Figure 1 (cartoon, one colour):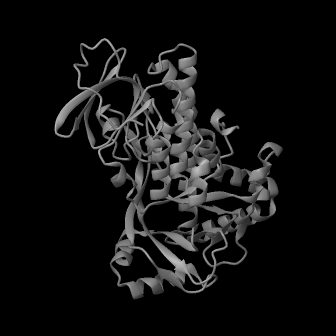
Figure 2: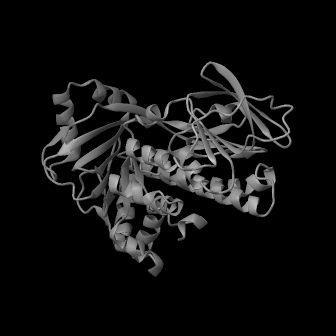
Figure 3: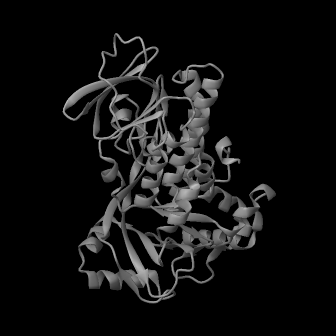
Length: 422
């Protein structure tokens, strides 16, 4: 992985391209795409406004699905990630403190013989720092990938046969040419906005309070999703018997929780957490972030593709956000590498539409699913309470329905990218 900048050139008169693909955004999704294109024969530039160290310095925690694990395994980086994260073997879904939670086990997924080895797990939980740093390390020997840290993208000009990316690095304004620009620069994507791509969706009435805790007893590698009238309350197991809390509540309540002294907050948290793991101790600062549903009206234009949070956002219930982005990565990598092998222009709209038609529809299903869960469970309206009790009974007792729901949550329902099949 080169950390040297491209030489500054006059892109409008240059007869050669600096790279095939310019990825704007060095977060998990953008870096994973660079990893997926390692040794692909495509020249890749990865631009990010932060240093490598600053990019990894976040307290965020992600639930990773079985499909995400397969994709990262196909890329070749999974064996380095797996020892640094937690594998969970059970999911418990409950309606508040009502008895009889729905328990999901690996056998409920009904995997085929080729994936029999996955029967001991349902998913994973990864912290941002070890996940992204491992992806960065994977690129160190990638001769076809150039990483441009501390590079602020100023704008992109899209031409018939190339796109010109103008960026500022070390006080100098530079430019590079690429066949394809990938916007992986987050929910407030400058690439998406300047390309004139509209979004639709809404902000929820909730914000999420997150923190890490240390329970008195073992979390036993179980992931919990508890639906409360104010919003879902998730407990995700972490290494060293720690847990990450994602607590969705109305905005005012979220800020109230964030401003409480530690003793009072711990008392409030314990009431939500329950006593199954004994007393809990808060071991990290609390963070608050609002949640929204967002879908881009289109994922591609000539010479441009969006992925990850730049293309879509969902409610954190079910932990689907990053996993949607990783599936975008696998799909886009497959489409452009196939186009290259077939001698096609990887930045043409005909090629990029294959990626959009694959991912936009599948992502819409997940957006609808997470929105339905939040709205169905975040209220005490009696007819809805009765309906969801029937739904939970169905999940507990009707095996095919349970399997379909679990396959959706684990990413195994829908088109599987080639990289995830080995």
